[in-house]
Image (cartoon, rainbow, N blue to C red):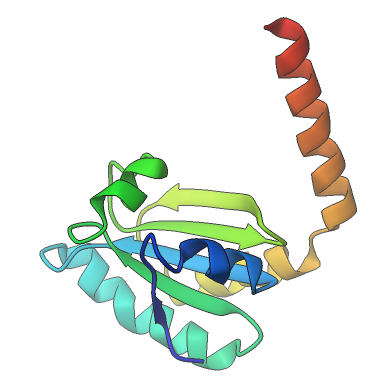
Length: 126
């Protein structure tokens, strides 16, 4: 699957229209971003059941701001419209592969229950 260029116009439809979405927040001037790009592209070719997207933080500053991006590259992962992972730093191919494997193995009923529990706790503390 080709890597999608994500922006504020297609963000929601991309997240809603795919079971798993990996997002690479990057910039043209970023050396580590450039070295990570081939690793990310290779993974996108291996995992055709996963949507791979890229956000150019220079062009999409509002979207990067929504995610609080302060360091790039940053990888964020959504599964069934729930963000399940976010981490700054380029990943080696083996670590990216392991991340994808773990995300695919998640029990999303359990994840949603934990999210609801955390939200309820936060509401009770407010």
